Length: 142
Image 1 (cartoon, one colour):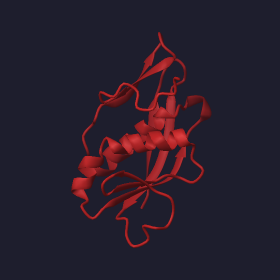
Image 2 (cartoon, one colour):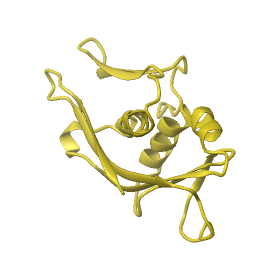
Image 3 (spheres, helix red, strand yellow):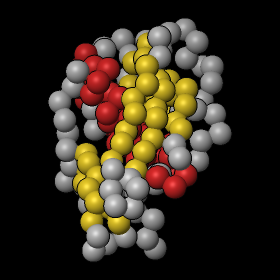
Image 4 (tube, one colour):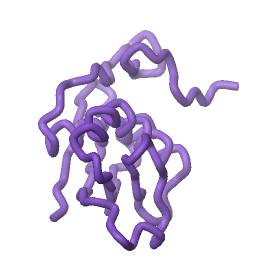
């Protein structure tokens, strides 16, 4: 059964927001059906159809920070199927997909906080993201 996680960060700019609807199960015999990404050993992600590549990359990153714990807890494999990632365009950046996935995984599996977060910063482009010691996993700056 799917569950929804609502990520929200309020700020003077309005904030950041995303709603993630997902479910989990063992990969099973139909593992060849549908597109999925291997995140870590026996942990897989099936992103929603038509997702932007940046959003898929950030969803993957949000799952990857918990992948070792999930792999140990599910030795027969685990598939996270994301049915939807929705957001108001004015309150979304691709990085928010990682924060929504992190929140969903922590809620669904009762896992500890790994330090992924966003904070409002009036001195920068509006928000600073913290990625558990990784400075910018998918930097768009060239």
